[in-house]
Each structure stands twice: as structure tokens, then as C-alpha cells.
Amino acid sequence: MKFAFIGAGSFGFTRNLVRDILSYKAFQDATIALMDVDKERLSFITKAVEKIIKKGNYGAKVLSTTDRKEALMNADGVICTILEGGVEVWKHDILIPKKYGIDTNVGDTRGPSGIFRFLRTVNPILDIADDITRYCPNAVFLNYTNPMAMLVRAVQGKYPEMTMTGLCHSVQGTAAMLAGWIGAPMDEITYTCAGINHQAFYTKFLWKGKDAYPLIQKAVTERKEVYNQEIVRNEMYLALGYYPTESSGHNSEYNAWFRKRPDLIEKYCTHGTGWNPGVYAYILDEYTRKEHSWRDEITAWLDKEVELERGEEYAAYIFNAILGDGEMFKFNGNVRNFHYVDNLPYGAGVEVPVLASKHGLEPMAVGALPPQLALLSGTSSQIEEMVVEGSRVGDKNMIYQAICFDPLTSAVLSLAEIRQMVDEMFEQNKKYLRQFQ
Image (tube, rainbow, N blue to C red; front, side, top):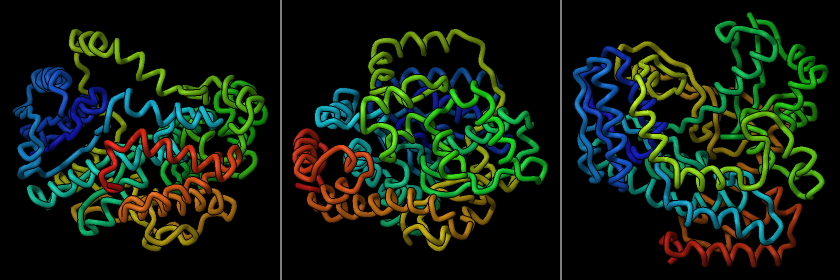
């Protein structure tokens, strides 16, 4: 077997996913192909993977390269964790909207920030997909790069036969959080979760087969420490009746309820105790800090004892189901909506249960979302469809029109202000937007 990591310099993701893959007997003599354009980061992750192999006494081999063709040639599995441009490039996704009054927490998924990240990233992602069809057309392609829904939609729109899905850890992470709130062991929890990436909801959340939502309601409304942990998400749950999958910080950007005025940001987005309550430019500050500390952090990890216990990310389980011992694995993945969610746009990117097996990837139909959820996620989904199409045909005006309907943007800015902001973001990013030139 051969597994190619494109963007392998994403140190945390790559080292953990390699550890998970090699924990399966079928893959312990695999070739791990590490590819990144940053030679220094590539050197660090190569040392980390070699350390994992040595600790596990595996027969695996490491291929370390800056050549994508070499990494992909005859690969069985491909994992993508790229970032197009460093902090000095994508910081403007956050800084320019802020100048116009749009306060951003992360900005990697939707809204003007996420849309321009997509417009930059879709070109290298499609280049990777082109190379997969040339050099490893039967490979299983797993994408971790954001904005997930639009990138997966773009790739699957061009290559509908490709065995490909997008993965996000928010579904299993939030399920574990909710289980902890109600005192339930995770192995006794089952759920149905559907929607779009970073805006999916648990339409069923069961403990030993019984509806656990009354217990969640009690925890959120009667325990202050639970409410304070995820203020934005808990407010959304109390209003909509179903719990969303992504952090309060992310969710605060995807609607018009929490970030359109300073007093609302102060009330809902600054005092939560969860990992990301919603403060301005959270992820920009994190990346800026790591610009100076990442070498020390990686060196510290390399000096520690390696742990080989398999983690909770889906990738290795999916590869094992399709390429390994065949143990079927059900997960939530990102695919195009071909009648999987009845009341979200046909063909758009959705996040639904998917079964991985020797047959490949089989998405599951979940029927219709409750109408309030379909209205919220459907608005974002239609915007994403416009953006993907606007990028495909090189229509700047379609991008502007899509951003006009973004819930937070439209709550803060006039049409003329949106036009000015979008023009400035196009100018800032023109080096990366070949589809519009």
C-alpha cells in the first residue's frame, strides 16, 4: 500500500494520521509519501514519521518529496491538508472585512473570508485532483482542507467518479462533548447528523436507543457551567431545537444573530469557556503566534516518547474499511447532495452519514431536515453553489452577488459597501485567482 500526504507539513494532522494508519496490520509495511512545498516543514514531519515507524517496529517506508507527481504515483490513499498562502496572504480575509465592520473569528468556511479562501484554494485543490486522475485514478481521496463544502463540491463536480470525501472532526467531537454533559459513555451514544459542513445538526441523539435531548436540555438550562461553555451554540440549540456541530466561534460567523453589533459580540462571543467562544481574529492570532513557536513545539514533540494508540480521526478507519481488513465504518462525510438531504439544494455540498466498505463510499439519505434547519443551512448552501459556479466560469459579479446574501454581511453592510469590500478583496488576492484573469 502507498499513502500520499499532500501538505504533509501540517505537522499535527500528518503525524497523528500516519500513527493511525500504521496501527492497522494491513498497512504496517506501507509506503508513506510525504509531500510539501516547504522543505523545512517537510524535514520535520519526515523525522516524526520515521520516529513513529521505529517505535512501532513497522516495516513501513518513508518517501519525502517536494514533487507531487512522485508522491501520488500509484498511491492507494491520498490525504490533503494544504494551506494556500501563509499568514501574510490570508490575514487579509479577516482584516479587510473588519475594516468594513464585519467581525470575523476564524473565517475559513463561509462569509467573505471563507469565500476568498475558497477562491484561492480551489485552484491547487483541482490541480491535485487532476494529478490523482493521472497518477493514481483508483485512489481514495480524503480532504481535510477548508472551506470543506465548497472544495469537495468543486472536485466532485469535475470528477464525479472519484472516490472522494471531505472530513471534519466537529461531528464526533461535539457528540463526545454532549455525551459528557449528560454523563453518558460514548459507546452507548448513537446519532444521526446532517446538514452542511460546520453547520450540521444532530437530528437524533440517543443514549441506549432513547432520546437524549431532554437530558441535553436540562444540562444547558440548569447548569451554568454547561451553558457558559458554548454560549453561541447553546443559544442556537435553545432557539432551533437541535444541536449544531461546530464551535461557538465558527457558528457565530454563519448567521446574523451574534456578531453584527459590538454589544452582541461582548455578550455572546467573548466569555464562553469552550476552546473557541468567538473572539475576533482567534485563528489569525493563533497562527501568528505559531509563526514564531512552531519549530520549538515540533522539536519538543520529537524529544518526547511516541504514543501509538489510535486516535478518533476518521481517515485511517476509512482506509481500513476500503483498502484494509474490510471492517465497515460509518462516519459523517462531505459529498454532493444527490437526494441525501431532501430540502437542501440538489448537487450542493452536504455533510451526511457515509458508509465505508469494500464497495467504496456510500452516502446515506437522511430525508428532510426540520424546516428551521433547512432554512439556515439552505441559505449558506445556495451561496456556496453560487460561489463554486462563479469560480468555475470566472464571474466576479457572481461572487459579489453571493456575498450580498451572506447572513452576517447583509446584516452589517449596504450593497454598495459590499461591492467596495469585494473589489478590495479581489485586488488583494489577484495573484492567486487565475480563474478570473
